[in-house]
Structures are given as structure tokens and as C-alpha cells.
Amino acid sequence: MGSLQSTLLYLIILQTCKIAACWEEEWKSATATYVKDTEGSLITEGACGYGDLHKVDYEKYSTGLSTFLFSRGSTCGACYEIRCVDHILWCLQGSPSVVVTATDFCAPNYGLAADYGGWCNFPKEHFEMSEAAFAEIAKRKADIVPVQYRRVKCQRSGGLKFTVSGSYHFCQVLITNVGLDGEVVAVKVKGVITGWIPMARNWGQNWHCNVNLQRQPLSFEVTISSGKTVTSYNVAPANWQFGQTFEGKQF
Image 1 (cartoon, rainbow, N blue to C red):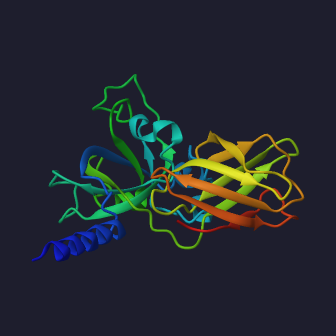
Image 2 (cartoon, rainbow, N blue to C red; image 1 turned 135 degrees about the horizontal axis):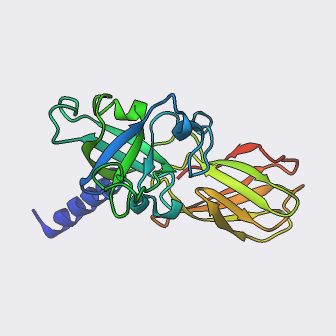
Image 3 (cartoon, helix red, strand yellow; image 1 turned 90 degrees about the horizontal axis):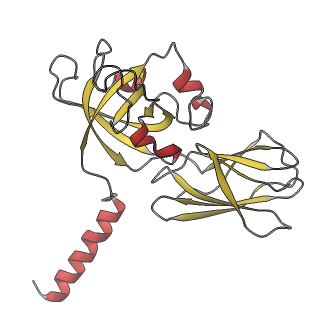
């Protein structure tokens, strides 16, 4: 094979690799437990600020992250593929995997040993999964199971969702349904009478700025952890109201 053909083949493989998300990580070791659906907090609340997950397209396949993985909320929205391993009694046959979205924080309990109740203590890597997600990889009778995990691309339907809240003194936006990396690292907002205004992370994936942006269309510029940026122009009309959700472009 000539050098030109070799170069072309390399470029084709490289492009295919990008499309197939070769940035996906190697499998790492961790542990996992689950929260019963009847308790509901993981589905309807959560430290990432998403609220009712049924309303933001994340639904039942979600997880809380230990202190080490949560990283002060910066990983909210990230997607993880998880599989149960090395436990004949509790892991489902064939070690099937499930993809979940990070939506909550699993608080540490330093009054308990890391291997007995203090599963989310730093620097443990632990997933507190929704019951539906956990049942895809292990038996519900299990207390805690050994797992392997890796970051994967988030597959989303439709565009980014922007839910606007705040008051006359500030504007806050919750960003959901984020594809690719899933985790947002920077946000800017623009009205028709302003330039681009950087927003600060309030908590989870809620971002805010101390500017009154009412009675003007809103545009948003969102950057994810890989450095990719997407700009959604005039997604909210001039007569937008607090509490409304608008759809923009997707990565």
C-alpha cells in the first residue's frame, strides 16, 4: 500500500473514530446501590436542580454520584455506562450494561466505614442508581454490588432545553437535554439590547446573571466539557415568562 493510500486510510479511520466517540473512557471500578422508586427523591428532586426528571427527558435512568464523581455539581448531566461485575449471586447473567444520567449527589457519611454504609465518602467512586436502572444490571435483593463504569456520549432527542426563572433583579436558566458530553461548563445569555453576558453556575445546572432581561428575546451560548459550543439565537420570544421552557439547538 502506497503512502498516499495509507494516509487516506488513516484519515478515514480517524474520522470514523470521532463519529463513534472514541473519547469514551476505559472501564473503571466502582460500587453501586439503588434508591427505591417509592422514595422518589432521586426522580423528583436531586442536587443537580433538574426537578421532576420525567419533565426533563431523563426519566427513570438516573444516578446520584459520590463526592469524588460529583465534583461539586460540574458532572451533572453526564452519561455513564455501568455494568455489574464479579458477583455471581447478584449480577445479572452476562453482565448487561445500562446508561444513566447524573442527576443527584450521594452525600458522604463519615460516621460509617467506607465499605459499610459510607459508600459515598471521599474518595470512593460510587453510584446511587435509580431502581429501574439498577434492575437492568443486578437483582433488586442486592445491597451493594461491584460495578465497572465509563463515560459515554449522551444520546438526546431534540434540542437543548432552557427553563427560565428569576425575578426583576436576576435571570436564572436551567439547561437540560444536553447531548454529547452532557455536562455544561459555561453559559452566556444575550438580549436584543445587550451584548453577550456570562452566566455563573448557581447550583447543579442552574446558571444565573444579575441582569433584568425581561421584555426582550433571549439567545444562549452553551459550552460543554469537551470545549464544543453551540449558540441558540432568539429561542425565547420578547414576551417570555418565568417558568417557561424553550428549545434550542443540539450539539
